[in-house]
Image 1 (tube, rainbow, N blue to C red):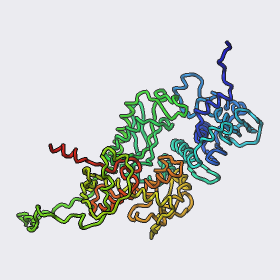
Image 2 (tube, rainbow, N blue to C red; image 1 turned 60 degrees about the vertical axis):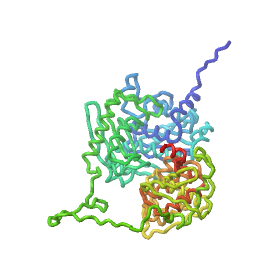
Image 3 (cartoon, rainbow, N blue to C red; image 1 turned 45 degrees about the horizontal axis):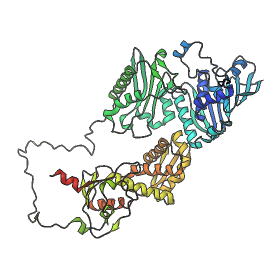
Image 4 (cartoon, helix red, strand yellow; image 1 turned 60 degrees about the horizontal axis):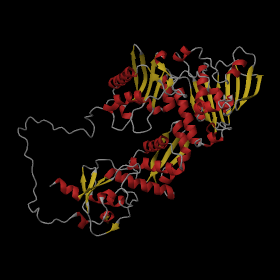
Length: 595
């Protein structure tokens, strides 16, 4: 029997490595920019076309490479960072494995122009699918120009499964942000399809954060600064009142390297818990500095996961640093006795020796045993009890609901704590969570508007300006039509700014800027790709924003209308995101409680 184990050819081995290191265009961006930073660049330009499918180009003014180094850089495991195994535990640079350029060249057409300060001529190198096509001397400025064209041209399956351009470019911006936020000493420029998206001059750390994430953060950042014998914690956290449910800006870095670390994330969130609403999350930009010998960054191909020697001690330090920063700031909510909601305190009157006896008004004609005219005899609403006739509580989740049937017999609706509506059905008590019911109703309404393209817009007397971040702006081209169908009237002012001229009818009194931003964050967070999913994400975000708040007491007419409209829905039992709206307490269970 012949031998069956063979060594893989370099081209195939590089393609396999590319599958781990180069997952999408954003991976190429990350590797090339980190190489430029390691080369000591002070100015870096990133040029992208078709979200990286057609071109990814990185231009830097770094040290450049000699002719030999330029060729060696594309060999697997060729690196200037590692000389022996101990170097793995004292890393101060970004790239070190020597896999990135070889992997990129295996799945793209790569061109490199590079020169050192002392070189009279530079080097031009062209590689396609790991095969060197050209290597020659050229006139070239100091630094390097990497051009990566037609990514995955020779791996059609990988190229086919790339996401739409908007999504891929959003991922590029994510990687770009993670790099620029730890390198404020470097100037960066980002171009997409020949349009400048970001221009970040050299700045201090806070200014770089504001340039990336928006000037609105200026008054919301609290400095974090703590030091122990084994580590430093620095950076900024958001004020408690800037926390929100989604779209939070959360960045955690170790030794100037972005990382994902759920354990340390929990340390920050736990420190905020006493000061923010349940379900909200804080903004934070936390920078850790630890001894390189106490961490291992070599546990994941993308190096976003890091193992620490003493995680518990770091957790305690982070939590204490965040708590101290919140405590020292003046951002902790306090009672405002000048506000309209402040408790009204009685004024002491020294001349008043005795408090007046409260007057009690009695209805002497009231007889509890006399039948009273009910709500049903005074109003007309849908007889939604028929919807549940002959349906057991166990079947309530699966039954297909039909539109409400008109009837003169009406059911009384009770309100409990401004949160629940309670009424009787043939099989027992029906309890409705009123805010969720309203979300269901509004969602159906907005979806109908989008599908039928019949949005009703209410003009604003004084149009408001909304400034989007580059990441938010990448979503807009996909959403503009859908936003118009809902009822938003937007005008493009350029430079990621829009004028809000009109809002959906029925949304008067709601902050349109905050609402629009929440809707975009919802789409970004869920990563919607299909049009139908985008419609649903927009409709749900708007419904959550416009729905009645929990605790609002409804009038009898409002409660009846809400209930009737809910049971006219095709899905009255659950909200679009799967939360229960209706609960039925069967008569049999109720009777058992009183036996």
